[in-house]
Every structure is written in structure tokens, then in C-alpha cells.
Length: 295
Length: 263
Ligand SMILES: [Zn+2]
Image 1: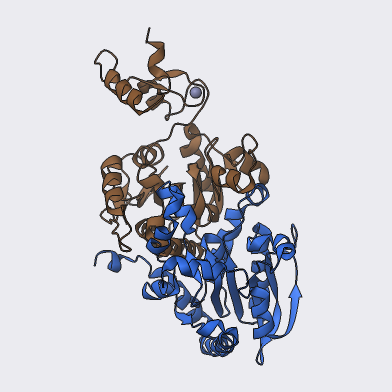
Image 2 (image 1 turned 135 degrees about the vertical axis):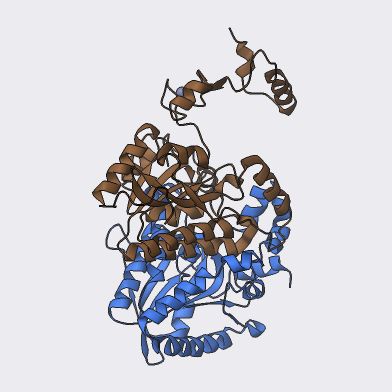
């Protein structure tokens, strides 16, 4: 039996540090079990991994990183990444931004907040972008905007559909107006791709907010969402501060957006690949061709 | 001048609002209302008017001039229906081949329950996408405060100009200070770091021109704008529509393009 107190929320930083130390006790490896933020029940990490990182008890979708998502939806070994090397610079010399970028790179093991490339899904050739929450909360600066734009331009040139997974805290304020301009830039790239009759499927995951919601996240021909994902223009805290009122339960969650008519369907992770395959077939996206995702 | 002083000037209560610019720039103005699906947003004025001898479509954000009208105008913060109303007029402008003037003055798109329920993000996103390929010239002028996405939703234009004391920012300096530094007293520093003044943004090529405000005499501002808009439209009307939309795409494509990142 595990010590019950071990999984209580730490009251302060000191206590949190103490906990972390206890967790390194080899008898109880911290990776073995995870507590569900929704139903608080414990699950074995291995069980979670085999279940798309979804709580087997209540269906809560744990946050996962971009590469884990890629593995869940693309055909094995078919992903060919593009522009992996693009890194952000602190052009406005915003205080503290260089350090933040450095930390984000270490923390996320990625160069920026989005991965782009081509792959096959059910043998259908597609272009993809998958945003990375652990890199500064997937905020959109110039590199994120550039990579999203590049993948839409590439897809336009090669007649490919785009499948895009969003997760973002919004525009990256350390890049000032140059970050805001990415909303217009990416929207322009989506528009050109759309005007050529090509298919764009957006999958919104927790959380998708701010400038990403107000640009390419809401511009999909079809927009899917993960269960309970927060999808908002203004985040709940900002709204509560503006209107000085508590928000109703479930406000701005995927189910709420479905009810209000802003997403097409809520698709749990376990059937996402199947659903995407089905949509690609229905959009008559050709199958076969090259061995891997490259053209 | 210190950046925060510009912020204060841009928000100054007696600063001319959208309606003043309409009255002074155009003749035969006729206001038209409604988004045809939910309602009419008083924070967004749309209409038709004559710019010298050229019929144009006018989209202007309006903050209101006194307590009563400020409340009516929701302090210039639009709901989704405001952006949809603007887009409806822009589409009509395209149909009848009229150039479009956008006058930007908002602290931001409204953050509230109704705004979220009716798709604030989707409304803004749609404007960004559609404005990019409108086949008529668009000129946008930030006349006061250009607050984030709610301002950009009228800012996808062939050229973007700013008044000398206007500001244009990804986030308010107050919001930046409280989110990044959890310290409201750092608002002035945030204003400086965000590079939100007309001069900063001209250097970053976010805007194309500054309209000077000599001695706060707006008569000169109106005169310069009137002639400037007229000439700007003449120049852009000479282009074929493919070239026009291609130029507009490239105008926004340049921000953070690979060459500048690897410099
Ligand atoms: Zn659970």
C-alpha cells in the first residue's frame, strides 16, 4: 500500500521539494504511477501509455507532447520533419526572454513550440503540424508562425492536405507586434491553401487559446477537439477579472464549443487516427506513393 | 517621448474617436447596421461615404465620448457580431469595387461570456483570412489604441498607418506586467519593452507610415489622412487584383521569414 499522504498537493515550495526527494526513493519510482488530475485515482504509467495517455477510470486526457501525438496518428516511420533547426532570437531584446528560450529548449527537448513535416496516415500522404505545450506553452512567436506558414505553403505546392494539432497559450508577448503579425501571416497561408481546394483538418487540444484560437485553429475546414479541452479566445481568468463573476461549469470546454456550434466533433484519442483516416478517404486524398512521407 | 506617455495620450478621454474621423474625412456618410445573424454591435461603426470624389466603405471602432455613449459603445470593445458586421461590409465593398478604410481604436476584442459563446476567436480568425484575399484596396489607420487581435481583425491591409500618438500592441502594458512579472507597477517598463509606439513599429516595419500630430491639431491630421488615403487608393487601384492580393500576402509574409531568422 502506498503512503496516502504522498500524493496530496504540497502546501508550499519547501514541502514540494521534500516530496520530490521522497519520490526518488527507489522503492517507489515516480514514473511507476500517475494520479489523474480529474478523478484523482492512480494508474500505472504503463497502463496509461497503452491507453493513449487517457485515464482508464474516467477518460481524462493527460497532456502529452508533440512527438507522442505523432506516434499515435502517423503510420510507423513515415514522418519526415521539416525545418527542425529553426530557433527563436530575441529581436526586441525583451528582458528575460533569452533565458526563457534556453529553459524551454532544455525542458521540452524541442527547438520551438511546433513540429512540422510530412507523413502518411492510413497510407494517405499528408502535411502536418503538431504544437508543443512544453515549449513556452506553445505560444506563437515568429518561428511558430513561420513554421505553420511554411507547412501550408509546402502543402499548397504539393497538393497535400494539412492535419494540424493545436495547443497554445496564444501570441508570445516577448516578441511584441511581430508575434501578433503571425496571426495574419498564418491566416493568409491557410486561405491560399483553402482557395486551391485543399483540405485542412484542425484538431484542438487542451488548451488552445488567444491568438492561435483567433487564427489558424478556427480556420479548419473541419475542426475536431479532444474531450474537455479548453478552447478559448480570452482565458477563463481574464474573463472572470473583466466581468467580476464566476464562470459556469464546463464553460469554454470542447463540449461547450460543440453545443455552441464552433467545433464539428469531439474525438477521443483512442479513435483519432481512425477518424482522420476516414476523413482523408472521404476527401479523396490519394493513397500509396513513396515509402515514407517525403516527396 | 517615453512609451507609457504615448499609451496615456492614445487613451486620453478627449482624443477624437472613430466618429470624429468619419465626420472629418468623408462626405455623404451613410451608416449601415448589423451582422445579419445575431445583432448590431455599437462598438463598430460601418458605412459608406465619399472620400473627395471616391465612394468608399468605412469601418471604424468607436469608444464613445462621454459616460453614456461609452457604455453604449462598450468602450470600443467589439463582440463577435462587430467583426462579422465589418466583414459583411467588406464583402459588399468587394462586390461593388469600393476601397475600404479601417479606423482602428480599441483596447481589445471584448472578453466576456457572450463574446466567447458566440465565437470571438472564430470571428477574428475569419476576418484575418478573408481580408487577406479581398480584391479591393484596404488601408488601415490606428487612430488611438490598437489592442491585439481585436485591432488586427481590421488590420490586414495593403498599408497600415498610425497616428503619432497611437499605440499598437500584442497585449496591454498592464496585462504584460501582471502576466509576465506579476507586478502591476512595472506597467511603464512593459510599455517600453513591447515596442508599441508608432516610431518603434515603423522601425520594425509593422506599419508603413506615421501621421504626425502637430500641437494636437487634428485639422492637420484629417487633411493629411484625407489626401493620403485618396492617393493610396489611387495607387492600389491601378494594380490588377492578383497583384494587389499578392502584395498584401507578401506584406504580412515577411514577418519572421526564414532569411531574417538566420541573419
Ligand atoms: Zn481519471
